[in-house]
Length: 90
Image (tube, rainbow, N blue to C red; front, side, top):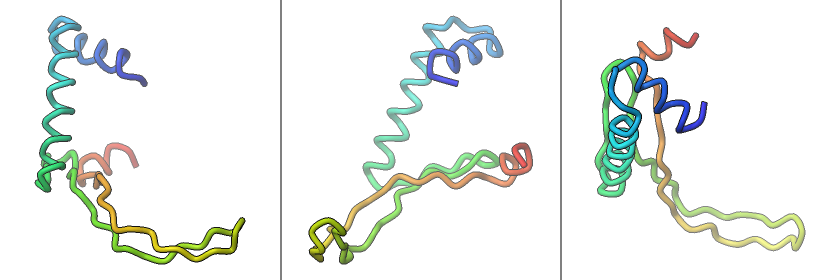
C-alpha cells in the first residue's frame, strides 16, 4: 500500500476528505521526524514505539580493496511493534 492508497483508506474509514487525511498524515510524519531528531521517543500504546538507536563507531572491511577503515558512529530511527500489533499480525 502506498501513501495515496493509505490516505484513501483513512478517508473511507474516518469519513473525512482525502485532503484532510493527507494533511493529517503529513503532520503525523513531521511530528515523528521532529521528535526523533530531538532524541524523544514516541510510544503509541498497543501499536508500537518509535525511537532512535545509537550505533557505536566500528571497524569496517572493504572486500574490494581489502582495506580496513573506521565507520563513524550514527543514529538510526527504529520501530518496535507493540503487543496488540504483534497479536493482530501473527
